[in-house]
Image (cartoon, rainbow, N blue to C red):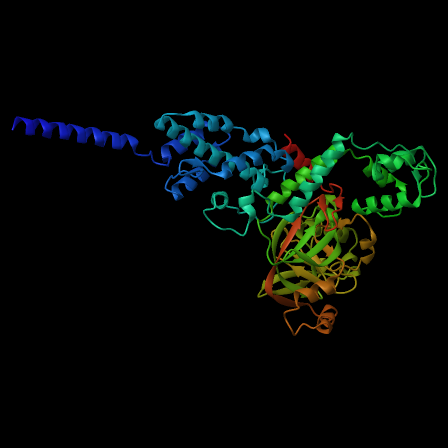
Length: 542
């Protein structure tokens, strides 16, 4: 009996030891918790702004580890480290993403013997990698400068609504996406092309940059012989080109290179080196590198995906591009606002066309230009085919005699309006294209066609004059069968203002890119016509 009791007691004791060992051997949970995520994120100043993303990401996954599978680091952890080392290639500073020494954490994790210590390091690695990704991806996909938060940055284009926690889920292969997040790649071809250009221009810098061209005469042209041609040849054709026979003679081969340079810089391709051509040839490679970088930044601000059909007006380029599925189907020269009446940078949707339009003069133009002119000359309105109107409701107006208005007291809050009748004198030409917006900016025809022959076309009060209004109207109305080419032409000179709604609204992007790479790989640069580059450089490189 005693033996049975002793054996029973020993068995119970052994069972407890076995249970204790079993508990000790059980793997630690592969997850963190909300307290650790919050405390860790707030402890690092660079991570603080990403706390909402951190909470959302881990809460949606039940706080399971993201960067470990079966207790082992997944390959994407090493890939992220490689991407961070290459941040310089994106025009970003790799030091900004070295908040945590993740490589040391990896080593500590491998060296840890105790399961509890190993789990603690696992938890830190996982949260650190996630926070580091958000820190980098926020800059890479959204931009390091937030134009919405800075008064001096002009950019009211539709917001980039990328969801970074979803992008990370794609990287971790936990969801599918049409976007190349899993490759840590950019979203727009325009950005990728500029990134390649940045690499090339940095290579030029490492090789010593390019020589300054100094002329002893006002300009040089094909056929001239001068020492300055040596520097010009090296600048455009490379160092080896300066060693050819008759290197100081401005030959046809060099003239072709000069004309190509002029085209790529928005200049008249006449082959003459002097004036603006010389000035742009002598812009340093460092300045061009900075210009490329800030325009890469602007690409981060655009929506992550453009619509299937949209209009893209690049102000410094003075060109409007009509796009379908990111392929250009129509393009034309434009005239934009002069510097004091800068065309705003924004986006909206084109809703309707007005044929044979009145020009409804804006309150500012009325107060600053029309009223003083009429006060000085009582025949000014009549001579310019203008009339005074008062809105009386139901889209109707009452025409008032010009003599009934005190033109000396008109300001931009006046209740009367002035409009110019349709016709040859009307600066809107025969058609305007409306995308209602707070800036009162639209696209329109113009009787001043000669301005399209200028290389720099900043002449308007802010609206955009387009070179091919008939072709654009035809494109917009192609799905509305009653609007045949002959019907459009008749409406444009029909003697009566006519509104036509589009069957589908078309997004319009008024943007500001001073450098880009075309389909042939040519890098183009333009002047900072409104000083927006200068303001962005101060914010970006501060």
